[in-house]
Each structure stands twice: as structure tokens, then as C-alpha cells.
Amino acid sequence: MKRPQLPNLRDHRVLILHKKDHDYQVLSGQLVRLGLKIIEPVEGQALPWSEVDVCFFDANQAHKNTFPWPDGEPRVPLIAMFSAETPERIHWSLTQRVCAFLVKPVRSSGTFLALQQAIFEFGSRSRADAEITQLQERVKARRVVLKAVVKLMELANIDDDQAYELLRESSMTNQMCMEEMCLRFLQSGCEKSALNMLRHQRRP
Image 1: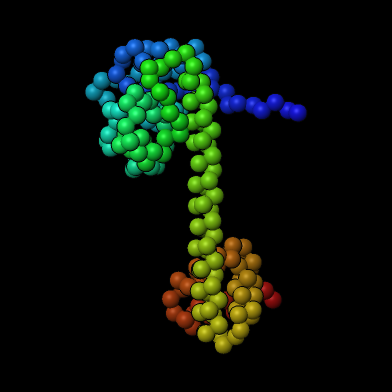
Image 2 (image 1 turned 90 degrees about the vertical axis):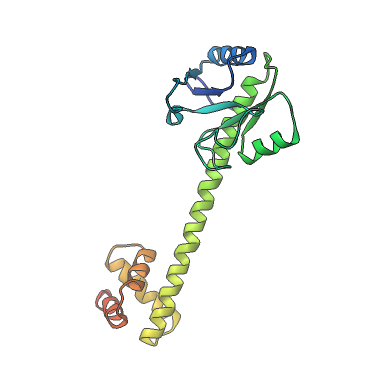
């Protein structure tokens, strides 16, 4: 049986939003030993989020302005660091869609596990979100096709199969997808010109 492969963490860029205390020193030392690079924020400058691959943050100190994106829409894997596990702080962190947790004080174990969980979870969520977006676009496209078929049925006094076939032939003649052809038909304005457009573009 093939051994499962974990993501290679080497050279990942990490941002640690935490005061530079003992926990920070222990965590940063572990990350460096794992081959990751620590991003050091420059005082007076905006945080370089475009360069961040994963972010650790102090969940007991974070607030709604900690991240530059809307609540629950993280652009990088988030790992919440907890000392006081209060219901309010846990709930807030969950609404940010954190991918993993790390309990303080930071110890010799737990950091590698949190990193692997965060990267895996973030990747899974990103793929799921992309699939949902794709499905939503398909539903939207099907609605456009349906509207075009109904409109063509009324204009040409034909049934749904004939209307669909006419639209399909026009899309093939114009070398464009069915959805694009239907949208063009619906946006053509004048009903007579729209019908003539389809009839003239049919295959001989």
C-alpha cells in the first residue's frame, strides 16, 4: 500500500500575529526548523498579505479588523492560538473559518500537526467553494437557455424541441457555446431582428 504523502511545508511563508513573548519565540523557532520562512512586519507599513502562505494569530486578542477580508472569507489558512478558551473567542474564531487551533503555551508538539491540518483544510474548502461556484454558474446558464427557448417558441410559433435545435444550430454556426448564443439572442433587442438573426445563421 502506498504511503500517504503530506504537503511539503518547506519555504512556506508564515505570518505570526502575536506579541513577541515566549510563545512567539518557541513557535517561530519550530517553524524555522521545519523549513518555513517567518514574515517580519515592518512598522508603519501594511501587512504583506499577498506574500503570506499561512497565518498564526492570537485568538484572544484578534478583532474584526485583524484581517483585510470579510468575516468568514479567509484568503490564507488561519491557525488560531488560544490561551483562554472562552466560548466568545472560540465562536469568533470559528466564524473566521479558521482551519486549525494551537493551544498555548506553545510546546514542542502540536505545531506541525496544526500546519498540516490548516493547509489540508484550506485546500479542501477552496476546492469545495470552486465547485459550488461552478454549479451556480451552470444553473444560471441553464436559466438563460430556458428563457431563450421560451422566447423563441413565442416568436416563431414553434415547439420547445424546434426552438432548442434552432438555437443550437446558431451557436454551432457562430462557433460559440449555447449559453452565449442564448444570451446574445435575448439581448438582441428587436424581436423581429432577433428571430431573423437565428434563421439566417442556421446551417445550410
